[in-house]
Image 1 (cartoon, each protein chain N blue to C red):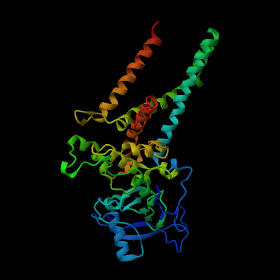
Image 2: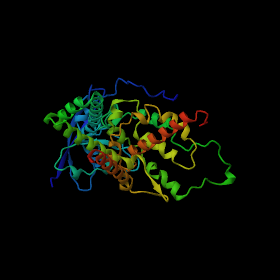
Image 3: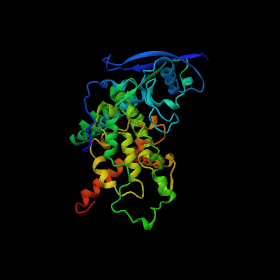
Image 4: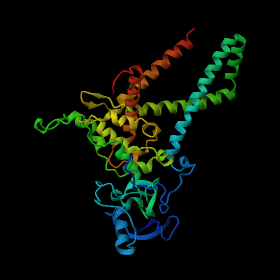
Length: 138
Length: 247
């Protein structure tokens, strides 16, 4: 842009209010947004758990058993339940946003939002079922 | 129903105050009155020095956007009766510098808007003799929603990203860029890509989604930005995989 002669950035007579550091606490919708951003920590937590599990497996049966035992402690269970709750929140809100980012048109008409969101849920359920089957089968 | 309602209005008179204050007015509470009617009543009957912008009073011009009880609203479409028993607090749109009372400085938005070339860009115009550029109803439908924007800037006042980063191009400007990108007659999407795909363009947006919630015209700027993120990513991959490709 080269035509901004009238615009003075810090005009002394204008009043500019500084945005508070705690802006995200001032409105429920902002707080919900911030919580959603924080759910990524739970995602990261599960990635770390998984990596630790693989590392324990690599160290041999003893280390793996010890890790499994730790996973059964109340602390680990509580942590996992909290993290799972946030990961579910993250996933569901993410899938619900999909239709906004990807309006799909079929035959010149925009598909209703649920038809764009639904395949995500179906894929999630199918993949979860396959993973569960791999883990549970003897 | 009470006969009057208290309206608390931001006053900022730079020649006498160093920061804004509130002034309360008692305004007749009529069922058919909107917040703008209350401001007009104050200006006509109580204090003629109150400054604010308005024009069409029917949700078309986009001039009368203000914060009503903390929410960005078109004051011509916000009924007083909705806020009984009151008080109703009317403030200038947040995140913009205040010039006087309820009047904000909007040059920043106008400069950003112009930077995304919100008009039909043609590489070559076809001669008049060939007639107009035709469009099917489906092609029209592609961008109609984004064309409803009235530049009222409520979305900017709702966007914490704009509040924290004044360089962010912002919701309306990006939605209007999309309005032309999606127009079958337009050929300017590559020029706009360079501006929109900067950090201060679409990537600053963290999808808070408030812009869409406050939009009085259902433009869905948040949707426009996310859709454009997809487009920009695809373009980047194409450039990465086929560097010889001329855009």
